[in-house]
Length: 355
Image 1: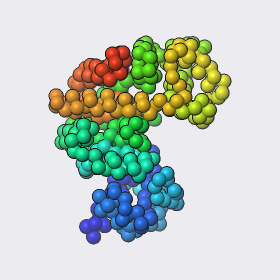
Image 2: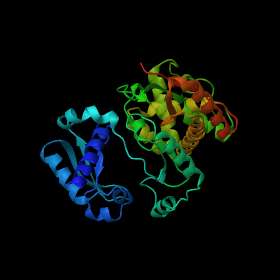
Image 3: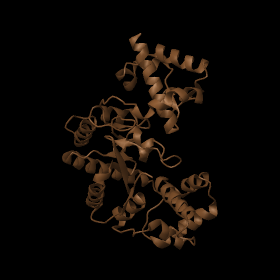
Image 4: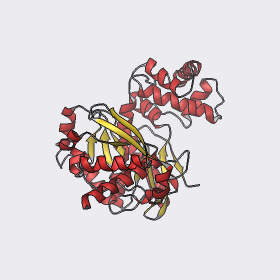
């Protein structure tokens, strides 16, 4: 009975989190996985209870349900999502959900080969990144924030691809609903110190030693013939840069850009504007994964500095969430470490405060 209750607790906490993150909860209903999957074994999850609870939730119309689907390098995963009937009971607990702090804090994602999963699974305790992430989590475990959980350094496939700091807090809504920025860290309001146009700036700084200027997206918009003060134009430029740096070919970037609701004319126009403003920019070679790794490295070093000063911080993609009184420190440290990592070229930051 104790184990059954524990499984129910996992389900309810994870479903509540999934609702606010707008993400399906993946459930393993393949009995064979429970004997081999590291995380299922670590958390002592049992197929019998998982299947029983899933069936109960479905029978009582408490979840939306999508039958098992094969995920890359994983077993079949069933997707579930809480219905309004269930969330009417769960929403008050969402921000108080806590995840137990358990290593590993450095890992690779599901796209990694078995070889790399084994390598990361055997990292020694004196590995620099293991030490840093253990230090950060030991310090943050004594703090309090919404969706409290370990902060992990996760590489998408191998040590050379997209090493980012991941924690559930960063996926709370903040655009459609200003929830994340209005939560608390240790009972006090937070602000988010954010790198401006970071992938573009990293690309230019690392590959050509060039400073992107104060308003890079607006500059490209102007070169492309758009009104530089138009928010829609800025969003279009940002989408293009993200996709052009993330894709490993022009065709893939164009397809992603069209998938975001834009057209070929806009794609060509922005492309020409970007090359006109920044002739040395490097696009369509998958460099975005390198930019993500650099972001993770910079934020990790700043967070370690914060630990030494007793300052808690939370990674939010390419930003850090800190209490208001630490905003100045975060801006100075992030700019300094960014410059150290990329080789002396400067960046620009902005601070977002609660409404």
